Image 1 (tube, one colour):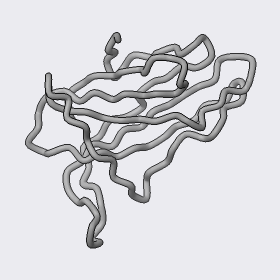
Image 2 (cartoon, rainbow, N blue to C red):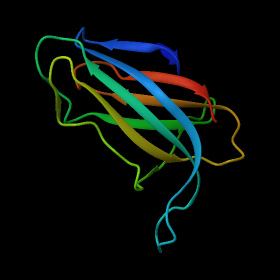
Image 3 (cartoon, rainbow, N blue to C red):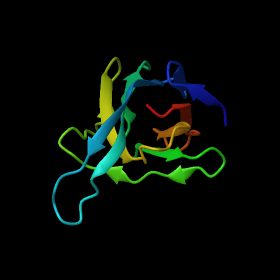
Length: 131
C-alpha cells in the first residue's frame, strides 16, 4: 500500500479523489466524566466525486495511527467540530469530513491517516508529521 504525503491527492476507482485538507494540533474533549480530554490531532478530509454516477459513501471511515513501526491506533474523539462524510456523493459533489484523534503531545513522529471510502478498494493512506 503506497503512502502519500499530506499534500498529495489520491484517485479511488476512477470515481473519487481524496485529499487531506488540514491536519492540526488541538485540545479535544469536554469536562464530562468519561470523556477523553487532552492533546489531539484534528484531520479534515475532502472527497470529490469526479465520476458520472452517484457513489455510496455510507461505509466510509477515517482512522489515524502514530508510532513509527508500532502504528498505535489513536482513539477518535467526538466534539462539536466532528463531521462525517455524507451517505452518498452525486457526480461533481465535494464533501469535507472532520475527525479528531487523541495523540500524545510528546509524540513527535509521523502520523498515518487511513481513509476507507469504498469497501472494494484499498484504503488511501496519508503520512506526515504530527502537528
